[in-house]
Length: 188
Image 1 (spheres, rainbow, N blue to C red):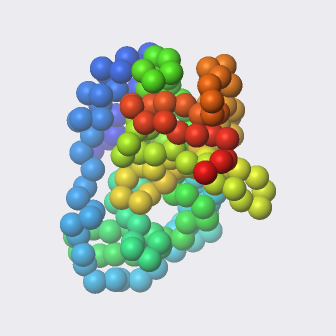
Image 2 (image 1 turned 45 degrees about the vertical axis):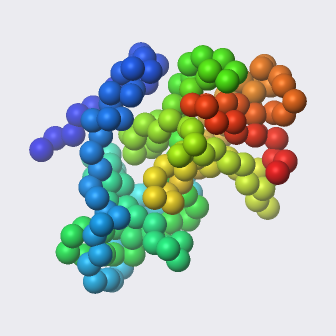
């Protein structure tokens, strides 16, 4: 069954996005607990590229399918899981990359919606926090996606967020989304 093409995020209203999110039905991977079957021989690179046996997976529909059965285990590892098998998958950083941003509203009334490299849409809010972590090569922003899975926010999207935050001013550099405030200044 072919997957539908991704809609243009810039043309969608918040109501359209809410409808798409409500229609999205992910497999219940959190309920599946098959025996561990081994290694998938797959890896997700820091830039979001998926590899199998060292070669990039070029079919976007395959990546979208695999991303729907991805789960983070309590020990922090990642697996691909179905009702009958569970396979390890190596993840260099975060399994997703937030590659596009749509924003509506201002200040406390703002909503930030991110498109991931998997095509998924995620609204930043209380359940999907936006955090900034200091790493040896500088600060990196992450977005909680689901079940402990995160998306690294692409540099261009991070710059868009920072520009919005600086334009709004305020006591702290940060942004509101869906009723939650997310500091972007690295301070705790």
